[in-house]
Amino acid sequence: MKILLIGASGTIGKAVANRLGEGHELIRAGFSDGDVKVDLGSIESIKSMFTEVGHLDAVISTAGVANFGAFDQLPDDEYQLALSNKLMGQVNLIRLGRGYMNQGGSITLTSGVLSREPMQGSVAVSMVNGALESFVKAAAIELNNFRLNVVSPVFVKETMAMMGMDTSSGLSADDTAKAYVSAVMGTAHGMTLDAPDYV
Ligand SMILES: NC(=O)c1ccc[n+]([C@@H]2O[C@H](COP(=O)([O-])OP(=O)(O)OC[C@H]3O[C@@H](n4cnc5c(N)ncnc54)[C@H](OP(=O)(O)O)[C@@H]3O)[C@@H](O)[C@H]2O)c1
Image 1 (cartoon, rainbow, N blue to C red):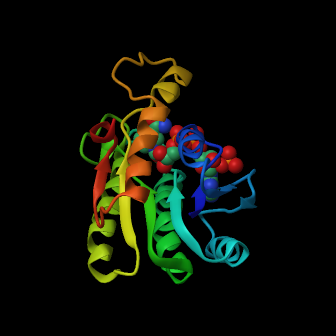
Image 2 (image 1 turned 90 degrees about the vertical axis):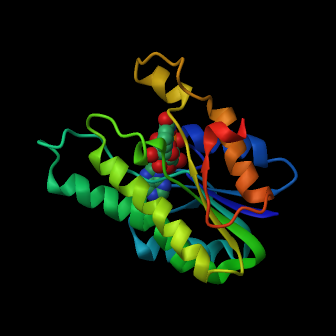
């Protein structure tokens, strides 16, 4: 399979690359590094990425920026960043990438558990995660040449360790990657794949 992985240098992306790198042609895309560079916040950048890589069997996004911030303090530009990067950046992968998908291929996006299990300071992140899951469910009704899914990771142990948190409730990046493998290799369409269900 020819697979484009956006966010390949990230915590989850590296683990997905490890699991899908062998036996497939894996093209690593990132913001500052990779075989191809892309800014999810820019339609022009996404267009030129697809022009550069050509037809694909699978697109996986383990990217998308949205920041935490208390409701009372979250400024307008943080809402805009979450909307334009994590939400519309990934939605635009489907809008602009659909013409590059080989028959029977798949696009897999990333949301997160905060859509359904919010916490203090998660309003912007929860908002876009929920929107991604609803978008995928709705778009799949109209898109039948390729499969479309979203993986919802829980807190990743490596991320929690980086933040100085207790990692016991997290899932390793490697275990999280299993949901992405299932989205690419399986038959799901229009689904939110909860990462803990695929360990
Ligand atoms: N880690 C967790 O605990 C967790 C839990 C739930 C959901 N998630 C979600 O999973 C996704 C990945 O998380 P992560 O922890 O693996 O992130 P990460 O380690 O910060 O990596 C982010 C990746 O995205 C790329 N990136 C950043 N800005 C970009 C842009 N504007 N355009 C294109 N690519 C961009 C980075 O590329 P460069 O390195 O080149 O900048 C990097 O490869 C995020 O959407 C996050 O919200 C993560």
